[in-house]
Image (cartoon, rainbow, N blue to C red; front, side):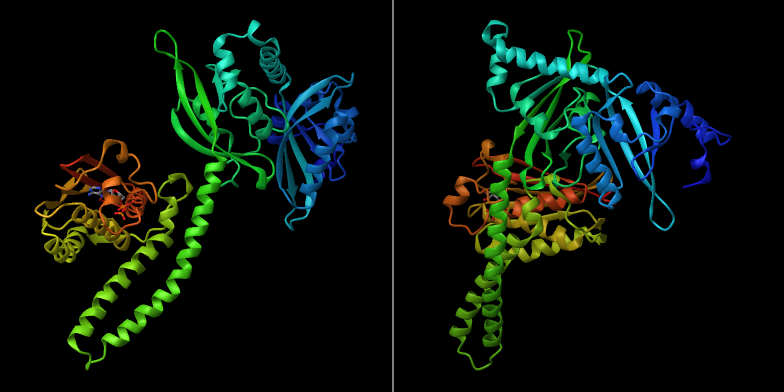
Length: 509
Ligand code: ADP
């Protein structure tokens, strides 16, 4: 601790930073490692109604409501043990007359050059008023529930009967109304109580389930800023194993003249869905692993057999058929193990790692089309490609080849004999646009939205005896999205489909 810290006075002196601290409207204090106040500014002294001299040496326990001392001490000890460097908590402080003052307290442990703890810096916001508003809000909800249909409108009854949490924010981001389910969610997400205002940090985590959301990232903060969104995936709850997954959506509320006047949010509990998806992923991954080893053995031995010169022609022909199927099986297993598979239906869970280089996309497309020609010929489907000069694009050639192979392969696969597939590569406004159009079976409008969902196969495709797992398109879209591009589909049942992949020429941002 610097020598200044030992001076027996308030935060003040010739250093402008200390002067700023002294004059700050935010309550500031420095607490020693034994938990007693070393210094405090005027705002803090005013907040707890005591003089700076009186405060010096007082233990924070003596300034805290008895019910909140335990939690405060716990956080303090965790910081001292090195388990956390900072913490934020809402605590009831007591002023000199024993009145409760609600504090939103941010604490940081300052360490010396050698890493040893020196002292704590605390910043305290007086949130007593917010608390009172919150209490009123809670009371309104409870009242509503207690009073039953007598006081509550029919729409209140309806809102409380759904298992989706709902929040109505006013134009300042304050909670104007919540329904009963949201009350339950708030209790899980904010065990230390919610102050009825958007942006409070609590036990709220990002889609990965571990990264705490900052105030700005909270769904209510985003909605209060006027953002509208669907399905922001968050996890809430203090204990990692018991967290609930929620999908949050927000819409702006407008007054008669169309001006923004708050926002409405909904929070749907998607934990069960999430758990079952995770269980399926684990199952698929372990089955695929088990399949890969024997497949590698089969392929290795087939290669050895095919290398033998003295094999009768018909035996080697049959062996080549077996080898082709085994190679196809290996590709399917690889799809199942592709990390992009698990991201296909859920963009929020992370990006695919790309290895981007400047690539001749025209050459890549032509190569893929050429290798698909024998298959198209056998299916009596005309396959034609039209490209314009050399289109150099910064991309991951291995991944983008996977996309083009999937789109061209599907177009041929889902087109009947006598049909055609046209592959066109264009350059427009710094974007490479690849369109793969077929005159095939097409896709029902209701199925289009699900095409990118892992394992989805539309009915006609299922009825046709065509191999496929329904994974390719989801993977293709994840790859295109990771490149900063988009993948769109236009289709008419019975007439054909066009898939359009657009990639920024300069590569992912
Ligand atoms: P797969 O082809 O292995 O089933 P995909 O993920 O590539 O898996 O495609 C998912 C589904 O989308 C297919 O099962 C099929 O129903 C539909 N589909 C994809 N491409 C086309 C197309 N060109 N024409 C008609 N349906 C298609």
